[in-house]
Image (cartoon, rainbow, N blue to C red; front, side):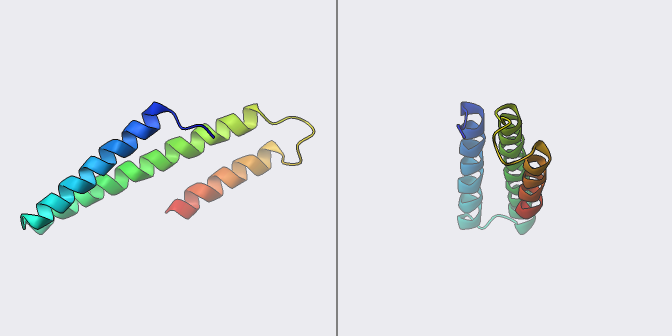
Length: 87
């Protein structure tokens, strides 16, 4: 699968968030603020997983030919399993 710039930019923002959280910890910021930022980072990661899985699902279904052994139903099930596994 090819990862587009949108997904890469999402991960770069998450990387910046994580670095900011580390800085907050080093500066001994209030734990509520740190937890808030950690939750935001986790949410951003979850959304990125969703984008990657959905893009891959669309790509797999569009490129499935009749000679391939996997059905569209199997491909969708695999995508759902990936999302469940990520939680």
